[in-house]
Amino acid sequence: MSLKACIYDLDGVITDTAKYHYHSWKWVGSQLDYTLTEKQNMKLKGVGRKESLDKILKWSGARISEAEKQNLLVQKNHMYLEFIDKMTPEEAFPGFREFNKLAKAQGIKVAIGSSSRNAIRIIDKLDLVLAFHAIVDGGMTENSKPEPDIFLLAAEKLQCEPSECLVIEDSQAGLTAAKKAGMKSVLYGDDKGIKGAHMQMNSWADADLEKFKSLFS
Ligand code: BG6
Ligand code: MG
Image (cartoon, rainbow, N blue to C red; front, side):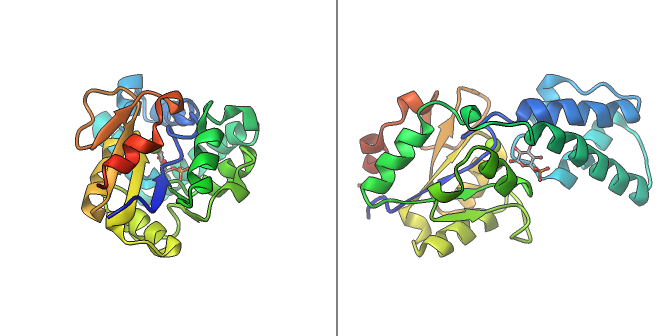
């Protein structure tokens, strides 16, 4: 068995959008008379938009109608997109482009597997639309992470078996999804609370394709 495909998460792995989500979710919290902390925001990493609101509602104890929920989700996304639309290609993490080029030069297929319904818009702002063989976002599958659907669809699009794929993720939801998909995984970042990865790297400067390949031998 050898490494045939890398499936990258987007938010927190290729660029830092958590700060934009935090600003927007904090505003949602304020509408519920609730102060969302940065620690809580970390727990929303990799979690879909609607599911994130459900968590905030649970933490705050607020009870609102379905129509109010929909309204908050629309407004949250509107606020978030104002940040996204100002993003520039320099916001891609240093070293990502180089790693991705190296992987492709070695015949490895590359895809995005993101829970975000805004993934293509973000990838466009980073000027990376043509950098991948496939892009799967949160609008393309029935279930979001931690279910495996997003990664399984990415593997299908790349015409690779799950066992030939390596997922690079920064969230617990994403690593659980990779495990359920039967894929190897690398944790991006140093969050000690996140479990289940086969390997860890602090940044793209640490990414070692030969080490990643050794996970498959
Ligand atoms: C994930 C983010 O990639 O996408 C989550 O880590 C976010 O924080 C989720 O909630 C859904 O994103 P969006 O852009 O569809 O609201
Ligand atoms: Mg992420």
